[in-house]
Image 1 (cartoon, helix red, strand yellow):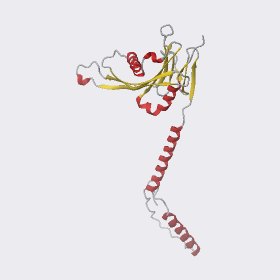
Image 2 (cartoon, rainbow, N blue to C red; image 1 turned 90 degrees about the horizontal axis):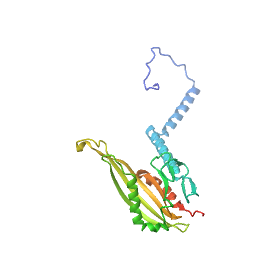
Image 3 (cartoon, one colour; image 1 turned 135 degrees about the vertical axis):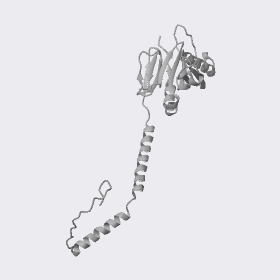
Image 4 (cartoon, rainbow, N blue to C red; image 1 turned 120 degrees about the horizontal axis):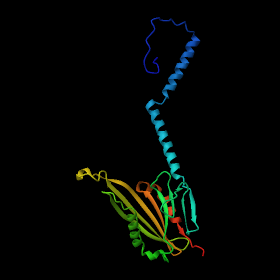
Length: 255
């Protein structure tokens, strides 16, 4: 018999004679031998057994992932009664104080995924409707210009590529018209911008993000809800992000 490592122990030089076996013992041994042979005939080969185990694990993992993907994200409503707007946001996002925006929330795990609201100054704006910005296509160009201005860099070798993905308008359940703008911006930079030889200045992609804006007008002010998300995360979370966009409302302030 082989041990657990697969090596056969050496035979002992002393040979022991077996005591005589009774007919009953022989019959019992024959019965056990038959049972073992019968069991072996129905045993699953090791390779097939491993295949079954791995297949079961894969199906369990798939079921687990499907169940996880089907779980709906919980949302929480944020209402700014002082400035006059509201929206829903994912419950696990955290508010960041001190950001250069009226309000700022961020995904605690994907740091480049965030939400903010910008409100124009009441003393310098006299908007009556979001249509004062022109059609959605013109508003989209203005939004993209604003993004590029904010992301302007003084570093050498930085290059930005941008495009407007979609522009649209909708009338929400509050009877107001809102514009929705989607743009993509990619940032490229050299890994050695001070190199003399061009071949030493290798340009690489720094980030690739999608920006979604919702524009609305109330109280003679322009309100903009902004969502930023890495492009490789957008498809996974698109439904949740659009729920945030659709929930944005601008509200009339009481005198």
